[in-house]
Image (cartoon, rainbow, N blue to C red; front, side):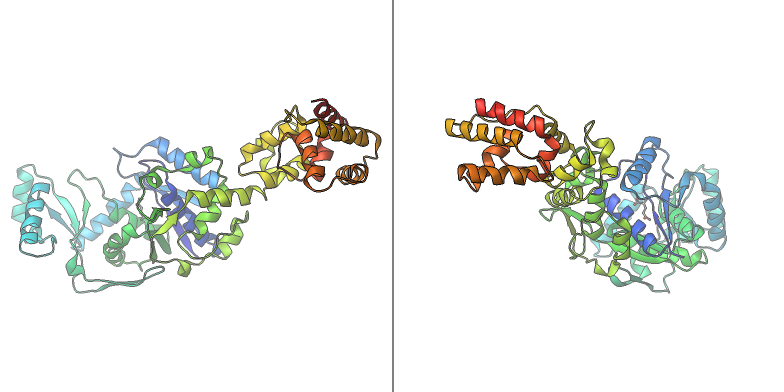
Length: 445
Ligand code: GLU
């Protein structure tokens, strides 16, 4: 059973990069018929806020990424405590007292000697008497995880390929602060074991965390999950972008972006595969393939997103959009105007063209005469199945006009636009009486 998880810290709104990670975890789970978990990483009580938890849930719901379960780290402290005690007893977690200043000084000395700034494990030399003296002086320890220097750290990354780290080149990570609060690293590994997570897919900023977490899994007596690390998201110009860091669902929504478009683009972003503007997320899941992702930064181009959005809007069924459309707008009207929209919000403009009133341009005398003929032809002729075809055929015969001089004045008089939806579909929606009235009015000038 494949189990993936999306593990945001509720310290802000999700941005496009987080959304991509959430989506890819959802796609992996769907593809395998597995589970997608939402894990709220709220161990940091000072920075976590309930309003962000709600916003994360709302964003995932808007995107259609329904979690198969939700967990909160703040409700799991007893579990972390139990695992912590075991690892302390096994000698894999140890007490340290260095201040930030002391550690900084040690690093500077190491760098000055041309050495890598790795924690020197000074605290390992402390005796029980030393610890007792510290306690008597009122010093609380912080805690580090003891890396196993003898075992090479290796994993086959689903995107980056084989990864190797030498534990000697890494500092033993601090996993718990002196006030007892948890840092991200250990609770996350404990949760992944406890929740049966089989695949961890996250950003490449976590690669070095993975190196130490691989050993945490082993120390916890568990097989590490499969790992994959995605390349960073950059702006269209190929650079890290401040805007991307704050661009989230609410901004995109306001700009008229539909969830299906965001999902379709992000599902492929980072691969060289073409974006498929499909409405079918299950189909995106079926064709999702981690091995198609490259190590180069993935470019997020808002112009491309708007293009995909237009393509998506052109396919949206009436039932999906009806509550967003102007009062009274029919399914036939939606089908007619949808190919002309970049955003659903533009439907109102075209509905106005259908329902009126409209403000056509001024025409010259010759065109006035032509439009008068058109009005009377439409009033007297058969309405039939295809009134536009009947009208234009009759006018062609009667006036000898063809091409643009035949069609454009009619479109302008009937819609007040030079371009727009297919006239053959629009005319029946406008209706005979309204169309005759519009032509007569335009003919009068
Ligand atoms: N809360 C961590 C983050 O947002 C989770 C990382 C992970 O996926 O393990 O970066």
